[in-house]
Every structure is written in structure tokens, then in C-alpha cells.
Length: 129
Image (cartoon, rainbow, N blue to C red; front, side, top):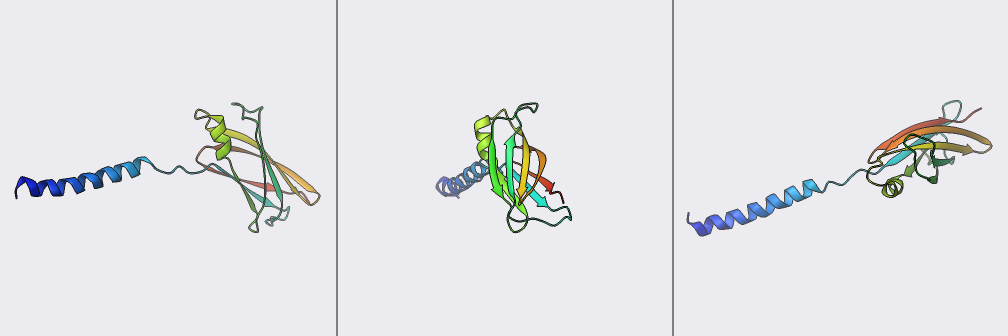
């Protein structure tokens, strides 16, 4: 095999290698999600409940000012995407603490969650009788 033929094999292998390494280096990062299940006092999942997440500014380290609202779906959970919060808070701030308020009809209950960047945090809040 002469030099010219070796060159034609080397170039496609080089391009393939560079493509594979660039794809591995650009992994898509997971979103930061707060998933809140809402249950009745009898442990039944509740759909249509309002879930409010509020940044706890008294936490250590303090969480920035943040409020978001979502409603539970037919499976009884609400999803709050915290990517906007972590984008504003900066690269050094990878943790946030959130008070959770749940309202359904005339009932109200509270919860608390520690959330991290690129992670799904799951909490369950029980409504009173």
C-alpha cells in the first residue's frame, strides 16, 4: 500500500474521532426541576392544586428573590423549572432553598425544598382534613 492510499484512510478516521470527542464534550446538562406532589390527608393525589415556590432569602447560603407558580396535573404533581433561577444566580450558586405553599379549594399547606442545579428535587405536601 503506498502513501496515497494510507492518506485516504487516515482523514475519515481523524474526522470521525474529532466528531465523537466534540459530542462527548458537549453533553446536554439536565434541567433543574422542583417536582411537588400534592396529597390529601387520606393520601390521595390531588389535581388542580396551586403550588407556589418562593426563594428562602433567610437560608444559608441565602437564596435569591424568586417566585413561581404551577398547578398540579392529572397525576397530582406540579413541575417548576428552576433553570431561570440558576441562570440568574450565577455559576457559583448551585443550591437554592424554596418555601412551598400549596392551595386547593379552601385548604392550604406548606413545605420546604433544597434544590440543586441540573437535578430534579421531589417533595410531597399533604393537605389538612
